[in-house]
Image (cartoon, rainbow, N blue to C red):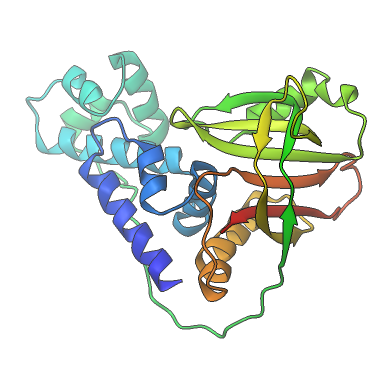
Length: 273
């Protein structure tokens, strides 16, 4: 856990160093030996807000500080510096966050609220037993629906899930179980939702090689709880069990096709060496 928190401190520092640049989220995930999907979930748990939201709030906080300190700098210069394509877009985001326009902030030097960098506390808590199982799975394919989740989305793959149902993709499946893979692809997350098929199935949306998997059961889809569980798996269970995540395989989640009942059981699967 300590090592995991050390890595997150390093990530926060890297974000700060590059706060005015385009941030390579995929590279940050690689630095922590996590998939992009896992990284986003663990970041949200540790820091308390999604990665893209954290970056946005830090940029708007620093932009306000610059406007208060420097009365001669233009709003256009500040908006460009902090990654906004137009001054209008920056002004709206700034006003929504601070409650005043950038111009008023610069001219009147009001009290401003800053979204701070997180402060990590090292605590030694009572060790708690964590349940998991390890299975060996032959290579398989996922056939159904796939799309990319933009890294600026607040909730990773939420739109892909929504489209899966809104487009009626679930109605074309025959099994009772949904397999979902989350794979790094071109710096984003490729999310594939469907049923498991033989590895040789044609027109598959994702093919997953043979592997061993560390499997953890869940009975809630609450984002905070799921984010916390991913943190527990990657920062506690894997190191404690002396297991290593395979970097070449996607994260997989397995759900019942019918998710209408409260507290339904589903499973997180992490590929291991």
